[in-house]
Picture 1: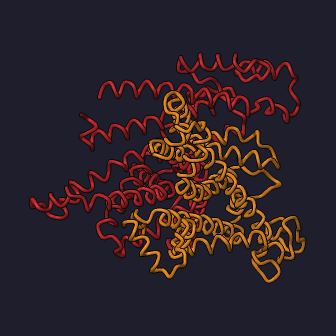
Picture 2: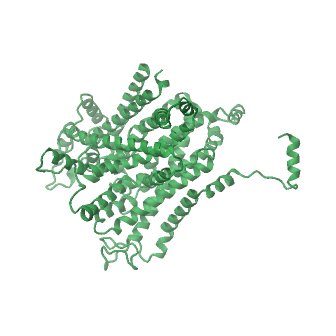
Picture 3: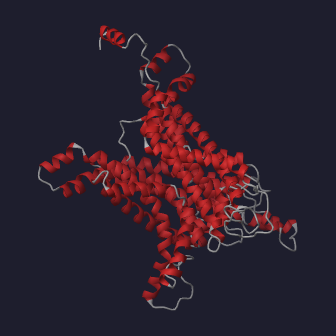
Length: 327
Length: 302
């Protein structure tokens, strides 16, 4: 196991380095920081622009590889460079990382837990009303992209606030109300009000995917000999299903988990941007529009790291669930 | 069944030569017998008809601006209402739908072809070819496709939607190619591939003649499901301004514009969003029915 893990980690380290370099090079080629200065009035002299761009390591007159070397040297020391406005990328992203992390974790936990539970429940009574209902609903949900879902949720929420509650129950913009004068519980309630819609829009898709997958895996397992044996040795149906069937059916789902994580990050990007959360995803979209090469590269780096962490976590969970892997 | 049995059976069929039903006929038969397949196919055909024949019956084209009607709700004159600029929502929506359907279809075709080639080469040649191709696949899976596409989006420019389609396809093939590789490894050991190899057929020709055609059922299903994936990705990218650029319109740009005015002008948002969801749903239903039709031994999904 240790050797396997060491090889995996080494492979991941190489992948991260290459992926981050690729992201930097693509961003440096595609984005044009010089154009930020073009429509300023009065137009700054060319030498000033050049000096400023060079100071930020964004000057396109410096050869690409030289800029890359400067950037890579900084990253090795844990410094992601400066944004186009001259602020430190590290400081900015450190603040934003927490926001994205909270959103993604919550969406992931809600999505995978509910999805697995719904899928397992649907499989227990195949073709029952619950199975049919979840199948139908997940089919529809899988056809709704996050951007549309988020907008529909906003519309529904504002309708509900206006018609049903007659006050602001669901808050659709930002992570918390600025300048709210309330006690500790007031702040908690305020955060929850902001949290509901983004979490729903992020996790609904995951629930649909996981429940479909878990259901199919569970159906494969329910008829297996070891479940019958467990029943024969005197376990109740419930115990046999939870201890043996559910656990075995979880193994392939865990492998699938690594694949969905990238999609989850993308979903979080949309959710943050639409609901106005100041997280990494929102910053990614903003920084592409402001031609902020260093910020884009840093966020790509973090995305690659987190996808590989998810992949590692799914390997470890796999080992925890499947004794054959540990041997 | 022995030889004489076969002869007997042949006699029993009154001398008319018994022809084995072709696989195509069997599969299409199964496909159209399933409710999902019928509904999916009918809806998708309807969507195509709407997108390409709809503009012919509408008296407004997508470039027309009705200066007497800004932000009007649906009426006999403007079936889906009008936008702030006076554009007819019906005409603009159909125009966006054409673009989204074409982009989705092309991107799915290209990405499935790419997945087939990369996966089959990796599975057939093994060794360093496999290792480097697998590594490339893993590398592209590490960075979310949306991220890369968004970063390189300034290169697309306006009107260059073909470049966009190719880039979209370049970042959709990875998961399929992993599956294809696994199946190619097992196909490689089959007798007909070995026979071809011993007859001296060059490897590349074996891959295109024998390996890839034997994976066609998987590839067809996958191409179908990739259409919906491509349409969804295109929508999300265009929503944020990274995909189809103005003056072209697509579902994504229309939804982005519509969502801003949806509160007081619901017709600018719900028609487009509804058509998008119905289209993707129909494609997914078709893909699911196709999968069942190709592989009846697999558990029915309903």
